[in-house]
Length: 368
Image (cartoon, rainbow, N blue to C red; front, side, top):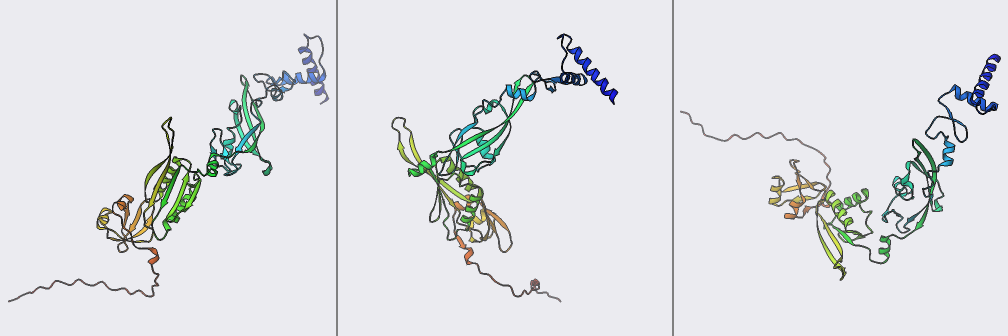
């Protein structure tokens, strides 16, 4: 072992002396060992700044020296102002619109990443939330970005961006306080004694969050009124109701004000949606023309199911049929009996009767 160490030391000194012949000086022992390491591993080089052994790259510099020389996160804003509405707890987007998102959600993360200036100049690799005190009115994101600093040299860096939450009242809350809240209203009505179909539609509205755009909901005698700040929101609710229930609707508009210079007017729109006055479990006495239209079914039918069409069933033959809303509105009719008229019976005994034999037709037979 001693001979091996002596041979290695001799090789190290000879290699260092060979490399420094032009300088006329001999290197130190540490420099000689580094030179020997490079000779033993030809694929390794020294960093041009700190002389650390590294893999060859485009700039021949180590990662620490690259980060000291190039700061790819310098052009990204580290502190950003984010406005929220105290009335509805919505967050303001970069284009001025407002979004209803949950804290530390993916939707909020996508909204916040569009805020910092200079983030589009680098390549975003990862983004995650950093815990902050709930009452600090701060949101922190840890971002990891990459950028090509020199031809062939890509540098990766991580830093924290802090979002300061400020209060700003959205346009919807401003109009609500000014008593000028709505531009369009969707009036949903069903004129029946019981509201089973209407209650079912309310559950669907809550399930699919179809009411999120409404700025106010008012209960009326035969239904609900949904008020919106945009006409498109009322049209969206009308389309949703047409997809889940048998309905018909009509629209109207009222002129509020007119600009005499441009000739443009400001209107309020009303969408009146009426549900079919038929609920599940109702007994129906169909008009003769309606019974023929739905498939030559008996006039006495039961409502088995209500969706965007009415499903009927014959209680005697169990034959089914479908009643379209357009067919009903052409010739309207009311339910003969509702579910409240049903009575519960208990079957105590069943007696099966034998089928009756057909009576043969009588005929006289003569014989001689």
